[in-house]
Length: 148
Image (tube, rainbow, N blue to C red; front, side, top):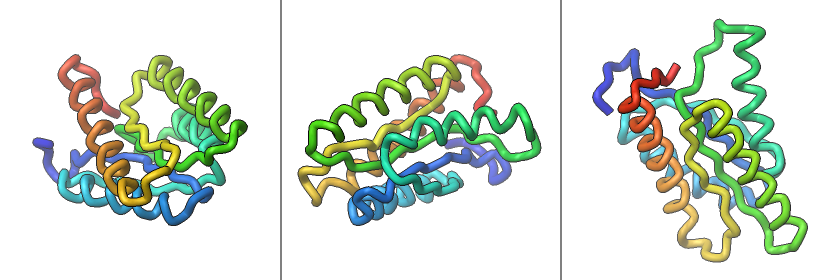
């Protein structure tokens, strides 16, 4: 990204505690990409993917009450859903809520919420989610939307 140090993009990385090993590998992938791009982030951990959309909404709505906090340019979400039917329903609900947040607030979100079948690919998922978020942030800028 062509920015000075003061303009470095700032991301919220929301990960889950549900499968800590997978989340840590995904975070390593995200951190690698963000460091490579000169970006900064704040890591937040939530119990499961179900809490991810509300965490993002809290961040956005929080500026209505306190505007002194630095705004996030984008959001990177990471988590592993299990293979149980209820977990897949939660996954569907979460991705629908994330999509609604994207459309309602014009957010750049990199989605790294997966059903973790291949333990060797989870770091790649983190990298992909970070790269997607950065690419969507760049797209917003191309359309004249200021990130903050």
